[in-house]
Amino acid sequence: LLCTPFTLLQVVKELYDKFPCEEVIVCATEVLAQPLANLWESLSNYKNINNSSSRAPSAKTLASSLLTVWRSLSLCFQSYYSGTYDSAILSLLSPMLVVTLRSQLPDVIPITLSLWKNTFARSSSLTY
Image (tube, rainbow, N blue to C red):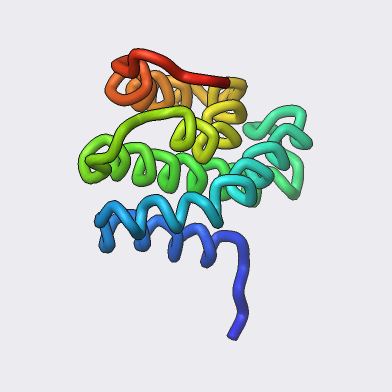
């Protein structure tokens, strides 16, 4: 069985799409937030994702896959997580929040801002 980053990202997306219960959301994010953030960081190694180099299609595919996973994770937290958006959950999501807020891909930041606005922005107190 050949397992590529793209295959793993598809599995992660399916996890957030098909098992939207609070325990799965939190557990999956505990395990996956930092590795996903590391993949986002790896995109910064490409000067321009839209260039014509031989690596560009892989970078474009990785960016698209990560965007899809981030969209699923974000919607999952906004729609199915009923717990408190406190410092513990912020700490859990912070690796992803940091890298997506620094992203140069135009579709990423609105997803991150929407997640923040609909969750943590409503919290009375957070510790960063």
